Length: 150
Image (cartoon, rainbow, N blue to C red; front, side, top):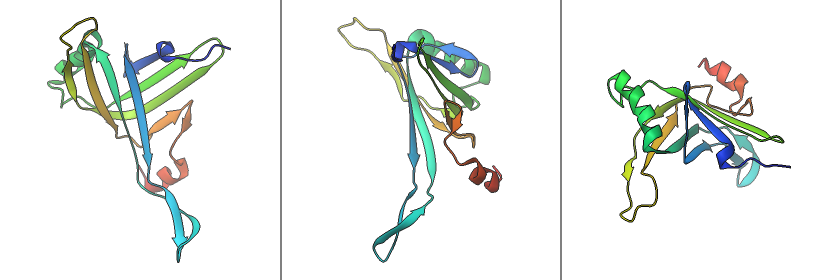
């Protein structure tokens, strides 16, 4: 069986295919055990956030800069969805993150010895109530999201 590896993953930034050196998505779920007088007794829901990073070469970084240019500035970029899809003949895996607000972290990383492309790191925060889906399965409890009215 052929397993999915990094080169098998395509990343869509909105409607644009970009090639990434690295695509990371992190979920922080503040749910935790509850206790009564020091004895574990159920759990409580906590705040949930997600963020991530795209690490790109200059050619692909420029694709995102074109979107920023059209918006008027990098900060004026609207939120966008980012979808990572990996597949082989035997496996498929898809992560969709919704309403990503981009920032620039590492504008330039250049080594004096050469031998590697320039890299640029773009962190993002997930801002949409659709949040994150993994293989089409939402991370958030949709009944809870619906009750919140968001």
